[in-house]
Length: 572
Image (cartoon, rainbow, N blue to C red; front, side, top):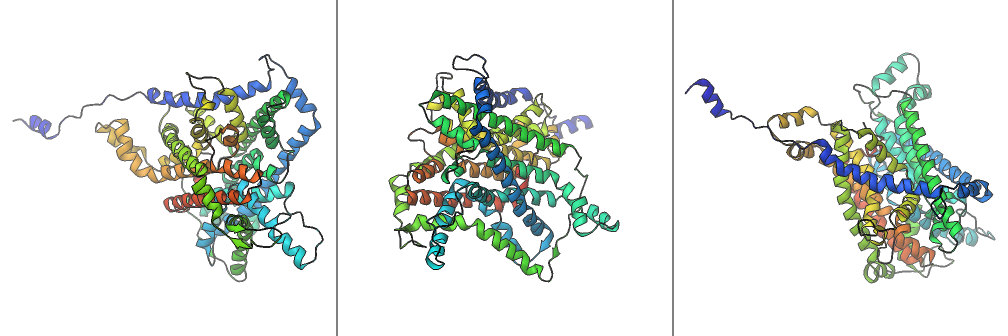
């Protein structure tokens, strides 16, 4: 036997596998985004500039522009969203600096507790604050009983109460983004600045803050859009002169067709404004180049002197305020006969029995819709993340823009868009009359977190490893399952869990789309609270916070608290 024949016998020739064209598996992704993101948005925008007969008309836009009430609602919405961003920056930015750059007593504990407020959505947060700071809440009762105040102090009812609830919930989003950005600042840049005489606050202003711009802008934009679109929190404290609240109130009434059309106009304008905010933010980041080839992390320094006590005291104060809603929620959930007393006079499990045993629909539906939504999110999110990180398919940049657009769209506007786009039969199914619309809208709303997590995880895997598998005949699917997935699964699961966390907290879109029998926990909380059944509302709130805390803990263990990347602008 010749040497060549022996070599052929020892090393069989690898037969090339027939590869599936990229466009073939990407087509369903394109179709999904077009049908369930782009089409509803276009339909909503078209509704704003047409009349009842479908003819082009700017009548309702003109009525909006000429109505002082709607102009005031627009200004109030911008004011509340802008104030929320400033409050979140005031809390989140110093917290991130202290956690990343300094060692002090209890730092690890504070790093975890700082993220915890995110488990309580603003709707539940404002409800918990009402129990503690409301006119008949614990604080006012104590002030009137022991300090002799003749009337309760208005801590909550107005824009300041809305700001308080939103800041206490959303400031961890700023902290997470800034922590992620700070850990990537090259120490040599700051050392060079110090060598040139730029020290202390000047070095932070000239070097550190500019490098934090992507994280700051990403966190601030997310907070602005979420607070701009929230309608449930203002309604709890009696504020109706906000765009999101007017969109909801006008849509849910079925008597006045003019008000209904104005609700569509408000939803369309909210979408356009949110898209505008997103474009401005991306432009602000794109104006400068922030990337470095490699970086050496800045070492943490121990705080000395009085600052070793001041830093924990600052965290304790901020988090003490942030956990006030949790205290009020627990008291209301377990309390009974609580009226004009600082604390409940009796405690009971009756409220939990009612929401978990007698009417478990809310919890069961939330878990059911959340599970189906996460299954959709995993299929779509991982596919889109792979598309952005590993392919050069046509339309890739457009897909990235559409995914980013989903983050910008207000939940209220998405709910209205689905009502208008899918109220007619589609392939024989009226989607808004099918249970599938609930997990579908949750998947669409929360998919970007899994996309970003998958994209960021794939960037840490060198393509050469996948190319080596392909070179020995592995198909694309086998390469992904055997090589890529074992290396990125933590990031993918963390992204999916974050999607689930926010899906469980979704209120704006689901409240508009829900039909009897489909109610989720947030719908149940809103229904119970607005009907005056506070104990059951609080009990559902405790269930939601417990589920969210468990999910957040799982994410924390998977990522080691490196959560900020899930919120980055990402993309290719």
